[in-house]
Image 1 (cartoon, rainbow, N blue to C red):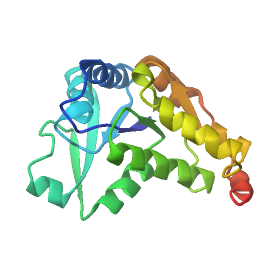
Image 2 (image 1 turned 180 degrees about the vertical axis):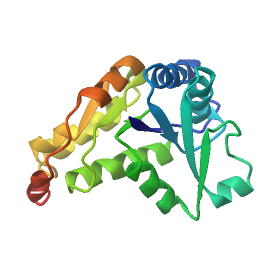
Image 3 (image 1 turned 45 degrees about the vertical axis):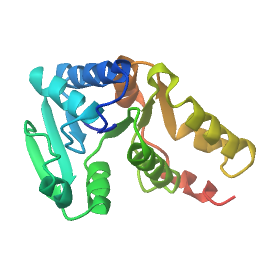
Image 4 (image 1 turned 90 degrees about the vertical axis):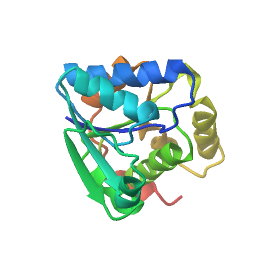
Amino acid sequence: MNITVYAASSGQVPEVYTQAAARLGEILAERSHILINGAGRTGLMGATIDACVEKGGEAIGIIPQFMIDESWQHKGMTELVITPNMHERKTMMADRADACIACPGGVGTLEELLEVITWKQLGLFLKPIVVLNTEGYFDPLLSQLERCIDQQFMRRVHSDIWKVAATPEEAVQLCEETPLWDSSIRRFAAL
């Protein structure tokens, strides 16, 4: 499987998040999955790449040109794909994915996760989406999504768009076991 991993680029985060991201990279390599991510050399992105590659795994990075110009790219990618902008980067990361995992991150990671959830709600992305909720990081977001459902901004059926994992092992297992989304649910996108 090609598994796209959304994750923080910040290197200033608590070590528990970095350790979980590194373990995720190891598991992807051990199970012969291909890591796809934003090709950042630092933070959880870099930790996932380092661990995956060190275990003999394959890591494909997709990064916009302006980040290359800033030398933000990881130098150890198996393949580096350069896009002209962020929009094409995100589209390519989703297009190449057989599943997505969101690790803790900042606004960029949150935006990527919410965009792919939106695409799935609209039937544009049918693959598994897993939230790796290390140390309960995503609890406030998950509560907000539940509030969206409770207040009828989303239908109850939409809570099946994403799965939540407590550990990297569980996240990969959910990617492997979650069936494709039924695109006919698109008719429920509008309340």
